[in-house]
Length: 441
Image: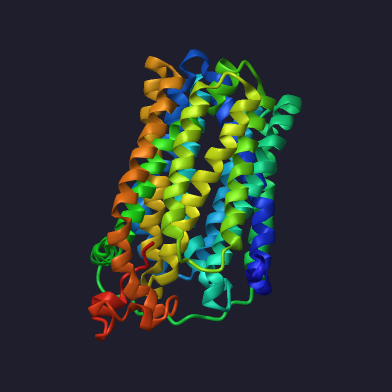
């Protein structure tokens, strides 16, 4: 399960990220609670606006950022994004400590969320693309991705719970301050890495041309296209539940910051369990079925949570939703990264970020608006139904997607070539287009 830790660079990254991500999750929870406190009756709508502001830049900038990530040194990109994120968290701390109040304070929080979203648009493809540089053996890459997901959700377990205690004791501002300091750990880890310089192809063509090339590469192969579309649908549908969590904690379940921390930690616990399950797998084979099952668990968990009136039952259901979301996301990431060409990795991960984070703000904005009209329960119930529909559609296409993926698996050595002998495409030399196709389920 921990074979990627044999790589020194990955160990440094894991430790640095472990510290920083706790602060990141503290800021996410504290931002929602700060808006809830400042906005009053407009909180559901403004929570959706703030979430949209923080994630929408990834939708618009993510694919373009991927073009530059393929051209630039990925470690330098990450160092710059972490330093900028440190200043963003420090600015949030200023707003919460001694800044203005009322509508102006909310406007500043939203503006800073936009800034963080623009930073993340470059950070995500660089981070995901650099994963392959931190492990010496390509077969350890799926394990590194799964362990990284475990780290994110381990921090998701600790960060919100800690934030709930800190907010109750001294207020939201200290969460932002702790987050700002925590970025120093990941910057130090990045600078301490000893990376082998990788040859990079000369940048040929305009940014627009390279972007179109990446789009054709990512969406020209049915399995990868299906994975990205399912991920986008689930991100869109599941986001309202996360955005409306403060409303459920305070107004549906009658709790406070500690209740919000408990619910967020429960979802993080489920996501951590799902990521550890993926880390224990030794092959990408069968991940298509795993994705279908994860979508089913997520959809049923959302439906159950929308109807729950008990804090502990809600926490249990959120554990299931966290596991379902994480398994679906990390399994898709693993399948994509297993086969993507190195010179296109940044662009493909830019589209992955667009599907995973960039589509989500549209769901949060719509969910916040609908929750203000009909209440949070019907919105999350509808989200669960949409997730189930998407999982069913993906499952119906799975046999066809497998047929497209078999030659790719055979070429990688994941399955014996002899096992694919019945398929004509496996016994002829692969075309240049096939050599660039990402892996499917």
